[in-house]
Image (cartoon, rainbow over all chains, first blue to last red; front, side, top):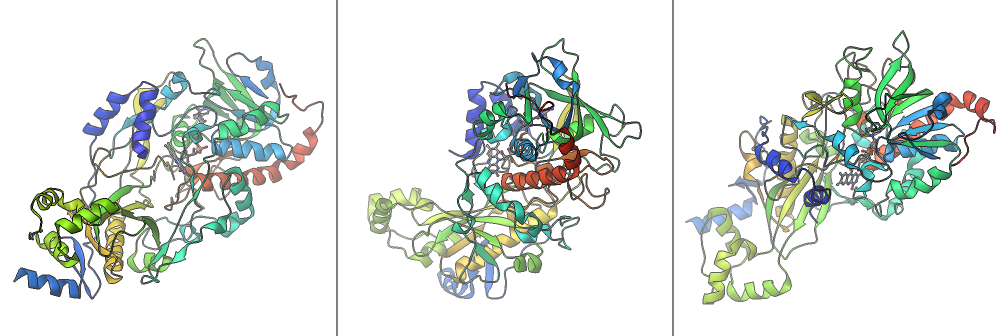
Length: 66
Length: 520
Ligand SMILES: Cc1cc2nc3c(=O)[nH]c(=O)nc-3n(C[C@H](O)[C@H](O)[C@H](O)COP(=O)(O)OP(=O)(O)OC[C@H]3O[C@@H](n4cnc5c(N)ncnc54)[C@H](O)[C@@H]3O)c2cc1C
């Protein structure tokens, strides 16, 4: 079982706090930290729409684009 | 022997114990057993009963004021055996380089080395019922020799400290296990350097409490409760005990656990595997340690056969479709439509997960809430925060994995949008696919040479106090990526031997059968 579900399961077994848990999960604030720097792939690699591709991938894909 | 604080004749506590250990989870039980084996008399004081009770567990409730986190009475258990009553048994030592300082990670480095813990390795494995260490050695990863190691964890059955040690404690002439005994205060000498007595209360509303005297005291109440207690202990020290430099509760570290990418496998799905960065990669990219999980999620052979019938697109076509968003015709009508709908599952795919060591962040901390518990103590307000170094670590590590998968022809990785966003949109507990945290509470009374950078010294003694010690993951100087219990146990054994040596003169003196406790 997913570790978190096991915890929820545990709470339900002890018949306490489940809805409060749900609510705190939904309402809790999120902390979005500042970035360090954008990661840049090494020479020979590229990042396209988040995909990490090789030189040859990019070359093949350029044929699909044209 | 085992006694219940609610009903026991309290003249039992007129004696002076060698050590008073507070909290009977893996840390407290290991320490008590180690001290008893050295002929020391131990009072092991446990807040809960021998089994789960709501009145004890309720005392763990608190508030979340930072990032999304589990309700605080969920990721820990407050009865004999502590949280080992539902731990998973995933075990691994910290890596030797976890103990070293890294210039890009402020305050990092332990006052002790990994090698200094070696004498207690075998005993730790025995306590956690682990298979021999060399069953799963870390391995060099072909194609990423400089950057990655393939790693595995050992599994404890998992050892339940409650069932493993209960009978032995009942029969022990050295350990007095007192259940339903809640630590509510420590009374110090006039110079405020020595603990003279610890004050406990049971759950009886009319109980005014009782004191336990000992030569040394050790708090083993868990990584959230150790700092909470010290911050609440203000009867003689206005900032709390051990908090002269405002360090108690700071640097709260978890093991942030997220899905950081999606993988399209090139030649069938490999087995799921775990990796970790080499020390060289950590130095080169200035990243923290991590456990990188390549997750294989499809396809089963039947679906794979159907897919190849329905769609003859090769890997590069599928990749083009994903990267460029272009569609391709896929042969036979009905199945084709089916796979158009379920396209993401119509190829060998998987994910990239990561469990990172968290950067030491003084603003990530255990604070006190305005809400109070039945003993008048303020509850926890947990302000968990990530730092830019955590995000940097996940981004750089994802890129290294993406390069490795592509160059070895294993597959292609798409780094998750949330991670590449500026600023990163860190997932919360209810975002699917993310564990977020692992119920590991570390570094809140961290070990440091300087009292300005932590709470305990290299021997787990609270800075500025002569006889107050702390056990558990709150003393970790940094968290590493490994699950904490193995390190909690080895540190408790080391502390046991340290106290044994320091108190041995006294131990000899009291090793008189007339003074020894009789089992119940
Ligand atoms: C679901 C889950 C899965 C886990 N899986 C793993 C895993 O696979 N691997 C791993 O390494 N770790 C795992 N852990 C973490 C592991 O359980 C803890 O690291 C470990 O139990 C901590 O040991 P401890 O003795 O320091 O604290 P605890 O086990 O929390 O024990 C603290 C004890 O102190 C007592 N206490 C508290 N307050 C007081 C008080 N005021 N007075 C007296 N006594 C008090 C409590 O009742 C408790 O018995 C998991 C945790 C959870 C929740």
